[in-house]
Amino acid sequence: MTQAQVPDTAAPDPEPPAARLEGASRLRIFAVIGVVVLFAEIAALQYTMVASAARDIAPTFPGVGANISWMVIIFGLVGGATTPIFGKMSDLWGKRRMMLISGASFAVGTLICALTGSWALFLVGRGLEAVAISAPTVAYGLFRDILPRRYIPASIGVIATGLGMSALVAPLLGGWLLDNYSWRSLFWFLLIFVAVVVPLLVLVVPETPLRTHQRLDLGGAVLLAVGVGLVLLYLSNGATWGWGRPTAWGWLAGGIALLLAFVAVEKRSAQPIMDLELLFSPKVLMVLLAALLGSMVIGIQGYSIPYMLQTPDKAHLTQMVTAQVVAASHGQLTPALVPMVHLSFNGLMAYGLGATLLGYGLHSAVFSGGTGMLAGGGAGEWARKVGPRYPLIVAMATFTLSCLLYAFFSHSAWQYAVIAVVFGLGFGSFYAAAPNLIVEAVPARQQGISAGMLGVVNSLATSVGTAVLTAFLAANPAKFKVTIPGVPASLTGGYNTLPQLYTDNGYRDGLLFAAGAGVVGLVVAVLMRHGRRPATGGEASG
Image (cartoon, rainbow, N blue to C red):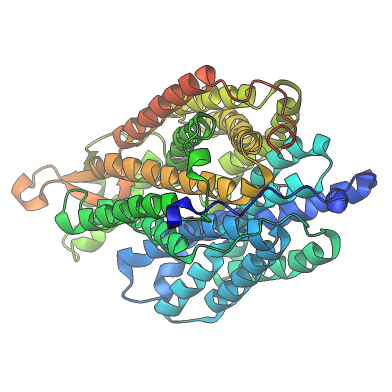
């Protein structure tokens, strides 16, 4: 008998009688939900606090320059590569156990980042932190295994949107810490946070007794993790390397080749990481396609809105550039000539509010995060009554609307706040719909790896969206030209580029691209046959 003919010994496991908290008090159930959701917020919490502090962190590591972006890139690379593997290991060895391992890795990495003065060690710490990205995908399966069925859809909706730590506390606390202390205070806070939630997870949350009895396919795991990592590496660095350069294409081609090899190996494996017939089934494929489109919108908005808000307004920009011109003249531009200096820019920058990180939190993140937090649980409960397809339709419609509003109307603080509410509604609905659609489509023994593949698609799509936006911004850099009456233009020079500042056209093109992705996602959601019945918390697919 060849390897391809060996029967799959990983037969479905019957659900143990004690697997659920049936008969437990509401206080007990809500305590379990609260602790798991807080733990699952670790990765989102650090991203909100740390990613926006790159400019403050860079001076600590002289010579790093533009490579400071690797502090964010490596987080996405390691997280995207390890998420499906941790999902599979949670099916094999226990979901709470794998969440605790990811928390321990996060704690060690955070401690390294808080203490080190070495750029290489800092990146190692960021990589160890990134393992916690797997926590939400593992938490979906944990809830499916231990909660009473009626609580599962709403609880799953709350996992990604959180209980307010990443949505409300992180932008405000992160901005306050940066304004009053060094960037290392962010990591000390994160270390304290994980030191609190890990013991709570041990004390409050039971482990699921459900296991898939098979060996971990190490070869398939390596192919999947490295393949995903190489594709993410290309998407994260393509703008810097040059999208069409052969050396850049090599990373992408290598990643795709490894993923194709993964499919070929898994087809012949007696105990594959994931049932490929299930992965390529219409139900799962349609959910992954919708997740791809929705996550592209999230990636574009998540990258663009903080930059738009923190771009200086015209008055401050003129003042800032004039000071630079005076400093660059080495005394030749006397105070008497300064009022005569005329600055012209190559395009509008009407989106700018000149906000700090704290200002971004107050004007936008609090509104989108707060709305998303409420919408996640609400949309999950709605899915329990009418099916998760309807929340997905709402998500795609509000994603599209928010992109169009940002593209054409977001020029003041109140407009940013209103549009952030619209986006938050879509964000919460999306993260309630997609995981619940997966839960309703796959058996319990494939829950961890299936949610892991959903996480991979989300990571890839977010990187694609960010890459597309980066390309649009790179094509529309902000430039200025100095004109002084009586001074020949040959002496004042032509246009000079303003680093890390972009004109409205770049943002508008990126947001319109995101709106297009939202429209296609809306069509997919409307046509989707799956998810039209009330969500059962996995009972129908169990």
